[in-house]
Image (cartoon, rainbow over all chains, first blue to last red; front, side, top):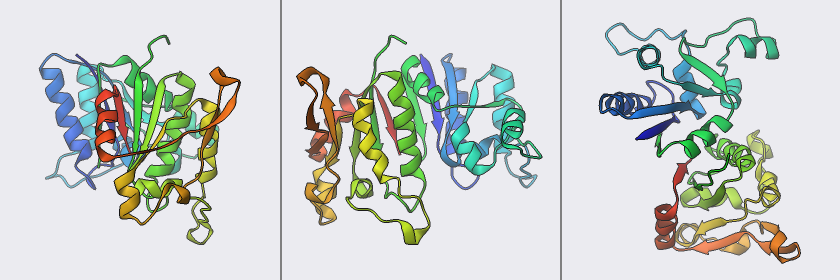
Length: 130
Length: 135
């Protein structure tokens, strides 16, 4: 089955990102295709590379990045939500005159159309959040 | 894109305490460009999003409620409000904005987009939708 996932909550504050990660991993293990993971609302904070969680805890952002490398996942951060919350890649830094970037390897910033497209193209769109 | 799916946006939160409502509306507006079959349901505190005469000035947050009036122009004209949620909050449809659209199949007659539905009918809406986005 072709599945897309939407993550609506930030890391650590909320379990949604953990649940989505475990769901994506399990779906891949079962042989399903993950068309896209779309990060919205505070979910965009799953894509910063500047977090330093305690060493005895999971690293939520790094874990997504590693999974993306392993399975060539398309991890998309919503540009409008990212601009509000300061998730920046080279293009955004250039466009908005920012002096730094913080996007994690394996993520990309794009528009909300990517979410709608994921809904249209996938057999299921699974939303994680409250 | 030729595929047309039934999208249902479920709005359950008050308009200004969190950013969910505003960012949900942004998805609906962008999504409108994709020519999908779109319905919106407002339930729980989400019914407050459609309240008439909103003034958010004292909160410092942007009053985005006028944007709902634009939905009709984007062919988003199926707005469902859950009856039980309205009643629980002491409200009726008269407390809500009268959102309308122009029906191109009926000589552009102005028609109401607003529909009062029961919780049972909301369940049916979810059942028959292919993509359910909950905010």
